[in-house]
Length: 284
Length: 338
Image (cartoon, rainbow over all chains, first blue to last red; front, side, top):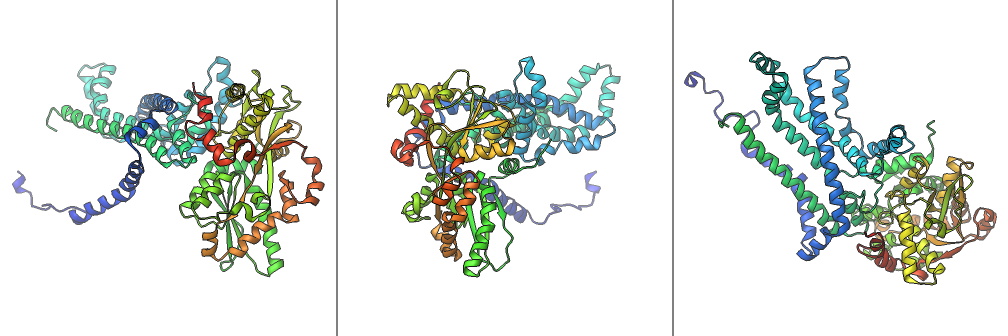
């Protein structure tokens, strides 16, 4: 059959020249990504491994890892659940104000994070609208790690929605109808038919949300309270080192965040490759 | 409900950008001065700059412009080291000017080039309490009481916070006659009473005023007076403790940049203006303590007499204080360790 097709493509691409396009891509990646990273690692070349270890294993810094990773994990999980729901609502239903809700999803990206942080702190402090309701119930949000998770959830929700949404859009409603006509219950259809298609996107989105939360500073700092060992985030530890003109210390702590993020993203990528292979019955 | 005011705008501006450059309108060919300054000095220099421009025009017949850049003063100093071409610096920490001097950008002997350690005005650390002073706070020992909750910015990230810490330490050293164990106990309780550690002075103000956190806000005397003026003298009271610390506001010409920009005389004229009677009067109007005798007399009522400890005398200078107290693993870290 394919013989009958005219050889209209060959190796032709819309953009000219493999060499040129790859060259430009690599240059861009080098300038925007690799150069700053290299200079970060370069900062570290001045210290010994023992000094490096002493900086990154300091008790207070370690406490900040716990706070940051715990809060980021909670924020990512909450975002996974609600982000999936939001994407579902946005794709599968028609309702007045849908466009607005859709546009609203990107707001956390557009809003300066410090503004988000101040607003959240105003709302959830004991004197704020939400705080006034929650504190009598014994639930303190602002100036606790719950507040940190809240700020992280706010700044990272678009990652989940925006990665799941297009995949869901590509999944025609006929697919769940087919499952239902074949006798699957609603729950089974969702679990066995829809969810498997969404897993890669959902995991990527959640992973990105988590990694984004690890590095967030502006939004969190105003709601965290910044109490040593309790609500200090790792980004604050880096900021403190910079204030002390201790670039090496700052780079050392930053490198830990960077490595955790990189490892997680890499793991997701690898898992995704395997998962998609399996989903397509091993035929890649 | 929302009353636009300069402190609020300051908070927002501080939140929005690490440093915001505010331009005083100027023609293209005019010589322009860039003043790199600390976070909460926006309003102060917005008031001083037009006066200086008029003064310079009257004296030299030349019309000039002055631009301001504000941010945390360590970040500001870092920006200059990384190439920001500011002509003068007006900071709230000696160390941040010293960093520039160490980098060769500011004259080595900058502190002796101008009167009063190159600090045209000074302030101290004072308390802002809620109306009627319900907790009866008069001095530093009241702040280490169990029923008192305090707000001041993190000494790790804020010069303002460092002054507060050193003032409390200086008080304790006097009160306990230098007994190290008692001083440490006092400081530990004092630090444990902190409700939130904001990264800067304006953040702490927001926590105390807008969020209603804490019984006491500790900040520069100038700042607490300005806040009280801004948010209502019926709701807050200023307490100046009998012992506190001398907070200098050092200024210097960034020699390299001024030379390159051809603004050396202008830069020096600008700093001299801060020492002039007119400049000092504006400064006193912003609740800073000044040196000019006529102005001091005029504003005498505004500034209660208090014993001001000097960082050089009690802590052996800023460099030593940074090393002993604020560096990674130093006393502050030890006192906060669990």
